[in-house]
Amino acid sequence: MKVSIIGGGGLVGSCAGFALQAGGIVREIALIDVNAEMAEGQALDLMHGSSLISDQRIISGGTEQVADSDVILITAGLRRKPDESRLDLINRNVELFRNILADIRQYSLKSGAICFVVSNPVDVLTYLALKELSLPPQQVIGLGTALDTTRLRGILAQQFDVPPTQVTALLLGEHGDSMVPIWSAAQIAGLPLEKWPGCSAGVLQQIEKRTRGSGAEVIKKKGGAGFAVGVAIADIIHSIALDQRRVLPVSTLQQGTYGLRDVCLSVPTVVGRGGCQGHVEIELWPKERMGLQNSGKVLRETIGKVLGG
Figure 1 (cartoon, rainbow, N blue to C red):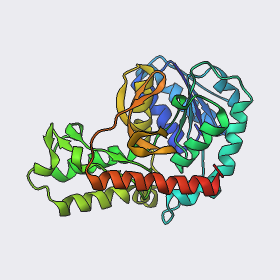
Figure 2: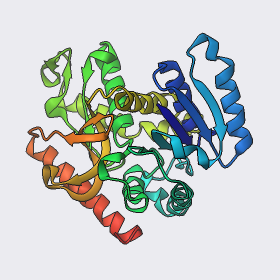
Figure 3: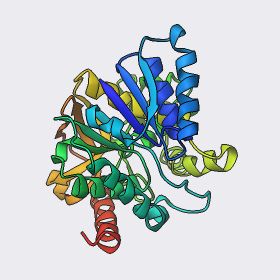
């Protein structure tokens, strides 16, 4: 499998490249960036360590690399400022993203190629990619709340002093202010989180608040997220490459799940070689379902206002 990373010279793109290299599953990684020299430098740095990790081919190049790619990963975009929401990025990033999509459209893409959007605001830009690339809906996915979900699990593990890999919890909806924690399905080691020693409504409220602010906290302290988003991206691409059909919280076009339509956001999604293989609609608490529908409404209004769609 070949993965081309548009924005591969930047922090998110290069961290994704390293996570994919460390995973040793994809065959080829191409780094593409408007700053060609930076992409070349990142590719060299990855190649220099390849003998200790894997036998993948690591290259840099222009947008022509997408023509024979199985996954086109778009991480390019302007960074969010500490005091602005992801949706505030819309007007600043939509024009840039449209230019990227125009570059991609110059090439005849490989049959079954998947467009994987990470750039923010990811749900809006995933919808834009779906409309402008004319790919089947299942072949356009966004990172969605996958990063928020792994942040939540890490914070829960720290709070309750348990291994992070034994924590199961989800954030669904918008990758942003209206995202919804699904406490009804949260578990530690297969046991209900709400019954775990030390768990209370107040503790969960604090954890939710910390999770919601974690992106801005990282931006403030180190300039932007890199490691966590890199492994979150690799986790999804590995599910595609291996056709694992794992259920992941990625952003895809909704056509009826939880009553949501004509909007891209995160619900439990089966991810395999064809991209989105389907959605899983589990029973939610009424307030969670209402929150998810509100998230869809917020995004639909934004899409209508900004994209006219």
